[in-house]
Amino acid sequence: MYEISTRPWLYELTQKYGYQITLTNVPQKEWQYLKDQGINIVWLMGTWKLGPYGLNHDKTDPDLLNSYAQTLPGYTMDDIIGSPYAIVNYTTNTQITAGGDSDLAKVRKQLNDLGMGLMLDFVPNHSAIDSPYVTSNPKLYIHAPSYVSPPYDASRYMSNGIAYGWGGWGGAWTDVAQYNYWNQDTIDIRIQEILTVAKYADAIRFDVAYLCLNDVIQQNWKNELSSNGYSRPSAEFWSTALTTLKSKYPDIITLAEVYNPYESTLQSLGFDYTYDKVLLDDQTSLNLDSIRSRISGSSYYFVQHSYHFLSNHDEDRAVKVFGQPWISDAAAFISYTLPGMRAYWQGDWQGYTAKLDVHLRRESTEAINTYIQDTFYPMLLNITSAPVFQYGTWQYAPVFGTDTAWRLMAWMWTYGNERRLCVINFSDTQAQGSIIVSNAQPVGGSDSIQVTDLVSGATYTRSASQMKSTGLYVIVNSWWAQIFKY
Image (cartoon, rainbow, N blue to C red; front, side, top):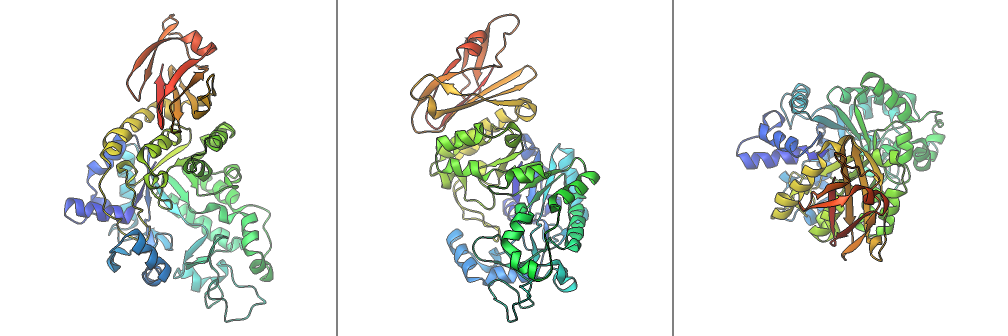
């Protein structure tokens, strides 16, 4: 999956081609390029209608203005385009295409014709402050406790008592209003809005989906809800919503933005994929034991239904976080050879370090890392686009036999007659060790088989029976990998 921040991307393409680019006149070669890299799903982040309240908020909030100055020195007011997550309603933002929803449908068909799907956002937790529901149906939202008289705490509530959006940490999000999922009317309306999004999408990414769990709602909003007469529902919203969604759109793919410890809960409620931020955090801390434990200690089902990423619109760029491009490359070998949804973010393949803030139409200009763009990612994407990595079965493989084997992690893939062994050295020292390759098979009755490292291109002749019994001995340089085909 490839995530695009839609409005900045269109702005970038406009500068590149010298004429106004909207969704419907994106040059075909831009879509074809993504297909050629093996992308199956394009996530167009930020396609829905926004309102003037959110834009004004983002142009006047002192903390945001300070963050823009850090992220994009020399920014102008024109660079501020407003958060794509302060959604007024689920109609297509005419800033990205004049034809609205009908144009979005055309873009989806264009992607489908290339063999790719379209992912769109749904934001369950909150709406824009200027959503029509705020005035037409205020009971859809959480309100200040009934025992609190106005004027309300302006850091938590609007002047009418509706709560600002909040995630249970830090301050409230003062550009959005908090939905009340202990109100059946809210549940019914929100499910209908999900179905609206599904009309135009092959996949839906649900923003901070875990905030709609009853446990989290109770933790964050107990006083507000109980004092206003609401009680905890017997069913989880997601169980009802996803059952309804899948009954009408059985093939649609669902992705939940979720953080520890709620990933497995959301998988059990029906999400196809859930964020695995724990793995990313373990990687950025360079903690091999934690990385190994996260991968080998999780069930195959959990790993297979996880969303693996090195950066996205919420996170800093991978090269910046890891400090060196070769370390972020080594992390890519891990994340993008695992089962699950492998997610790339606009600018990853260029090795950018500057953050693209969701409120802004551009990031700081910087030089492309030509090795990452022209050599590393073309190599990795070519390897991982093979059917064995898409449809095969995966198995973790311990590395043993030397005092440096602990530095290595390995796993196998099997699909028909195709076999892969991925060995990653996520450390600063060369390492070696043996791996029992249980899926090694003789070819044409011969025990001697060709083992090719797809990363270096080197081919070796090895005994299949020895690979299965005593193991394949490997030597892997620091911050690097070997991916064997055999």
